[in-house]
Length: 225
Length: 225
Image (cartoon, rainbow over all chains, first blue to last red; front, side, top):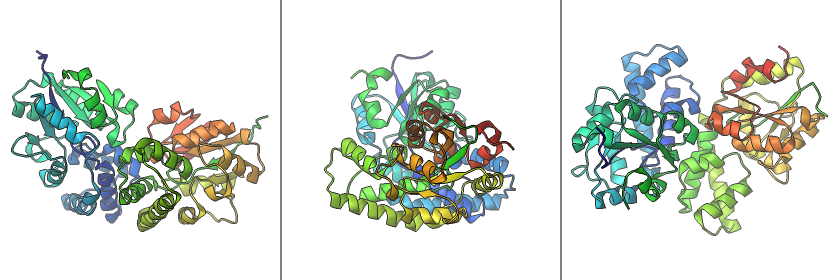
């Protein structure tokens, strides 16, 4: 039974930090190093889904065989290349202000990311999130990542709120699909480079440009200003 | 008066070569070096328009003053950073096969790019385009680049065909808008990372995934197989 009080579950890459394009090119470089040629826009459209599903997509679209050693090398290379670019990554406009506003108003919020804690840590530092204060659910902690609903369901449990009272905020189609699976409402942000239509077609309840734009419209999504 | 015979005018970055994301991150790095913080998805959505308009957008969206020296530094830095990544750039799937097929069938085609000859040359080499054989219209050669129609109108003139008999093939909203201004038909490709809806809303006559997908559907756009 939905509650009239809301809580927020945030994706991280492309939602609070401006890191999607660096992740995309890091995957492209890792794949090229294995002689796997995949167009960059196709990688962009799969970013944010679980690594396991991303791999299965690769299997289908390239027709190649993937050994677990090769998958391990791909993941490691991606992490290495991304780390080289991590210094260029900035918080998205309004990200810090948005989480501060929720904190000040006593609105519960948590982070749920398909990334691993290893790479998530620097992003969390960028927006000044203290791991002791805020529940952070990473890919390491659940069986299936997005578009499966596990990350968001676990984050709601950590907050002690009903999933039906949460707003999932994400930049990718996979966040919004996972929100629907979980019976949360999905708020789409354009800051990961998807179009408004792609997010609406995936079932987004509302679409905003970035965290700053969402902060300006919190009244629309259940937070009294 | 439209002719029943068609000719093709191709954009280059994101349409024949997979270079959009590298250009986007090169602009981001150049802007950051000038302490101009702009979200990466906003740069992505402006890529492909003329440098002059890109600058005016920056003026409006950041509220900063741009001296011509600063603009010069930005352009130079972008070119430098892009060159570092140019080795990672690949032809898009089907790009070589598509232009070969048109050549074999005697269908006239040309290149019209908002980029400068300096950066376009390596992309042209990648797809094996001989500058002596094919008209190449670059930003250096016209007064106004996309979304103004000058590049495409000039390319049609070089081919000696009526602009109304041309199909403009591009990956960005600016290509499609320029095609409409020129009274050409615009074919949108998803390979630059825009969504089908964005290209259709800009007035695309048809939308395909990439050059390979267009090659498979040439019958739909006036080329007898």
